[in-house]
Image 1 (cartoon, one colour):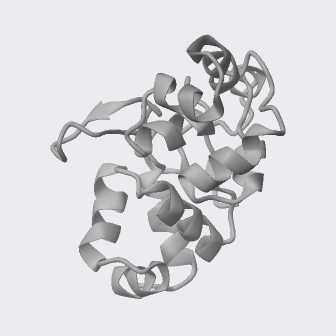
Image 2 (spheres, rainbow, N blue to C red; image 1 turned 120 degrees about the vertical axis):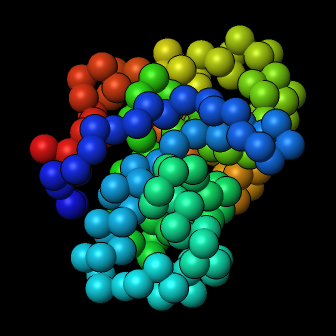
Length: 167
């Protein structure tokens, strides 16, 4: 995977946006740009491959604003990298990033899964593993493959540097 980001990582945290109050998370904007350039693609060419506009690609590369979950998965597929490689590591899991990108609250996901919010919170924060029965439900909700859901890092991965900054 590419290394040597020019700028330090941005945190994966909810961020207010101007799109109706929807909150989002950050992606590695420098990684997106370096991956695009390493494939020899212009922003227009990447946009065609991913199915969006050139200005959308530019937004990802300049602001770190992430695409919707299904487009994020497609972007990772086009580059041949895991979704987690494109998401900024921080205090949040991939489940948190997917949930906030979809504009959902923990209680909304808990209701979908038919569990209490604290149970979902324990999984999202990495205190418990993702139950296998949740995988197809979350995969369908976020329009991502089951592998993306199963690959949601635990708290230990964050604390030990798993998926950390490039080196």
